Image (cartoon, rainbow, N blue to C red; front, side, top):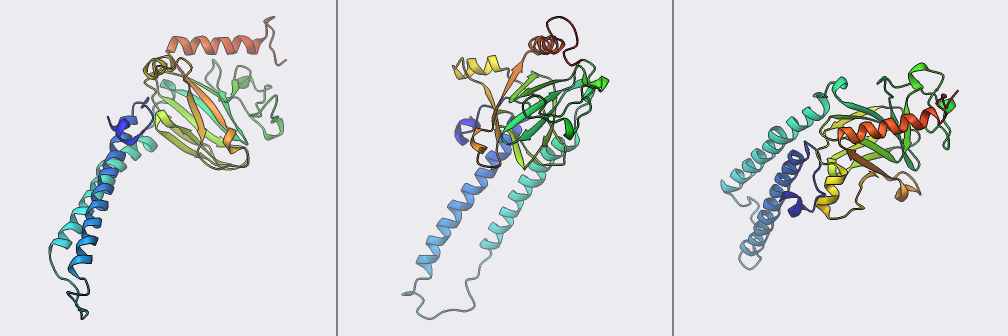
Length: 269
């Protein structure tokens, strides 16, 4: 109901509903303030019009109800800040899930694409180097001579995650400031050069389920850049696929098979 009233994308993560509730309360306060101040403005125009007050009264209007309204607004804002926003923020930045129980990936923004780096079967990210970066063949600069990097998987503009399992995404940038946005997951984080900033969420709706909800067999979750990052900003668009755990494992196995090469030899040696 909140999604429809506010025109939000369909919620597809564990924390999305709490975000929507907080946003709805902000809108309630804004509507109350807008209507209240508009009515007050009209009242003042009528009550203190020149014909009724030909001589200015520098003492001004006096009354206790205005102070009561101001106190009420402060209490409401305190509820929004202390009761809703701060607990939600603390959870998102402090209560990260155990990495052994989560799917960890790195997402590296560049003009104008999203590069995704998965640790392989060993669960350890391999070493990377700026000197090895190549936009066509090695966009994340993965050092395949590192034993931990031999089974790592990289994709461009394609993020795959399992449903009902915490996902930890380390957001980075190779050039300018970008903004990693997953609207249905209620996730948005700036990608800042020189920093690795983690965000986390738990997807609750697979891509196939969302297609059924939308009635659109071609629907895909999108990765948007929410920060103007250059002339090609409009085409910095990626896609996210939420699988069942079995589907995700099958996808990872497929990528590992491709990485090893058709003849079974290590593709990178």
